[in-house]
Amino acid sequence: MTYLAPSKANIRNIRDIHAALLDYASSSTRIELDLRNCEDVDLSFLQLIESVRKSASAGGKPVTLTRPVNDAVKTALKRAGFLDVLTSEDAKFWLHEGMQ
Image (cartoon, rainbow, N blue to C red; front, side, top):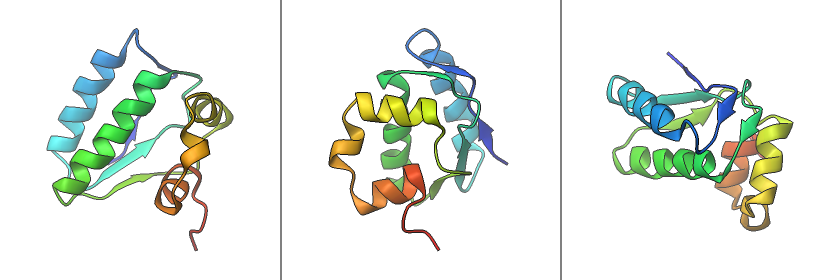
């Protein structure tokens, strides 16, 4: 099962997204996120995704994206400075770079 993120993923609805992700993660052995619909993205959503990655990793659950991020998410990543400090693991996660 995959979590399909909403088109608006920002501070206005981050609480709802957080609750939905908690429900999804608690019932899954792995976390697969689909961000293709995201068009209105802000830092709060990116921080939530990073928090999910760290928490899941600590719990032994893999977190993946179904596809590389779209232009809206990539723009938010750039605006927030994520792309300036991208590790190889981050590039693999967000952009699917280095994947075979």
